Amino acid sequence: MKGVILAGGSGTRLKPMTRFLNKHLLPVGPYPMIHYAISKMAEAGISDILLVTGKHSGGLFMDYIGSGREWNVRMSFKVQEEPGGIAQALALAEDFVNPGEKFVVLLGDNLFEDSLTAEFARFREQPKQARVFLKEVEDPRRYGVPVMDRSRIVRIEEKPELPKSSYCVTGIYMYDAGVFDIIRTIQPSARGEMEITEVNNWYAARGMLSYGILSGWWIDAGTHLSFREAAQRMAGEATL
Image (cartoon, rainbow, N blue to C red; front, top):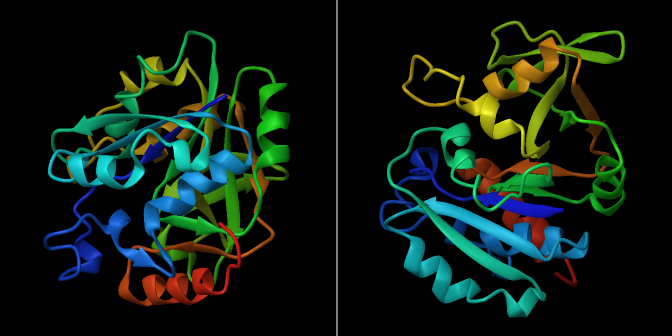
């Protein structure tokens, strides 16, 4: 399997820290935030990784990551010319993924404890479908929330006022190369972005969206409060 890390966006919620620096390059504990996403993939045996970021930060990412030798991986880079949503950024990976090949996607501002090694191996053997990862949170209204029918996700509601569960969909996704055909059918949302929730709902509507549940801590480090929590967590990690 290959890996794709999405590290674009304008970091609006973290301003003024992100006024001149991409949030994924901000220090979280001993390393820049992006370091941990690469480490999680390398830990799980993924050796080919594509990083997608904005045009203003590409050089800085290349300066820090280089060829990926520090993690024993091969790094590639793509530029998302303007913020257009997670699905639009993911579409840039189409020529990185071979036909029929499966791959994992991480949002670069998602930091988490669980190892994904076993999950990657399990997904590699599954029939054609997509897989997301859930985490129980105190305020699911901030996230995409799965609507369940027994043990199946029937749809995902984005930032609902009345969440139908206490779980959120984290920024960890698994797909095969067929996802790029699905992205081409997605229309921009009201905020003008190509939403990854719409892609996942395509799979959910057809009974092709499986899920795992994270047991360890998980942080979406996109706000000042969660960024501080992430820094405290990662400062306590002995090896990464």
